[in-house]
Length: 221
View 1: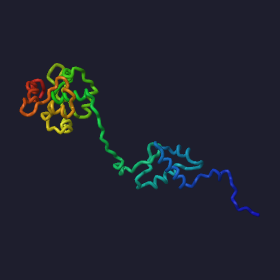
View 2: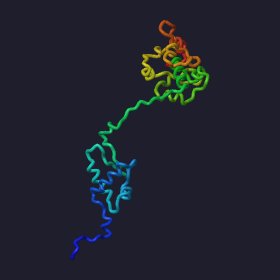
View 3: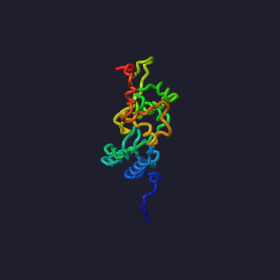
View 4: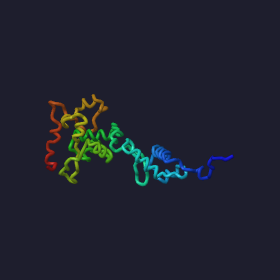
């Protein structure tokens, strides 16, 4: 009695899967990988005899024109969103940045006394102004550097920006609220920083003009 069954050999026990199955394996690894994967790493993961490089070529072609592409990253491979669909992955968030008390006081002094130097800010506050405080306000684009004073050392001054005015809905620094308005809005607990005088309302002496009187000779044109 003859046996037509093919003999089981050692090679048949370790025969590589068909290429379609190898593509699926590569696809699974790339999809789950947090970082790009090299061909060597793919071959190490897949059964003996697999050809990860060939499977990648076939898989890459199969993904052409789809929302996800198989792309080369250096000497490794990864799955990435198609470039023309990148806009779908964008997410706009609003970052709330809380100003420190020192930053609030510094900003208020600059707003009400501009143009003003760091030394003058420190004199009004009674404490030194850290570089980090000024850098934060500069980064937020709420203050900028003004003209240098024509005094010893030519110190730079600080002024508020258009961005600051836009953020608070002001046409100019003349529209800054007075002390009562600031307290009513909850922006002040008891007082403004030491030495800060809010610009008076309509009918009062214009503090901005009073502040600027006599300053023209202190600044360059």
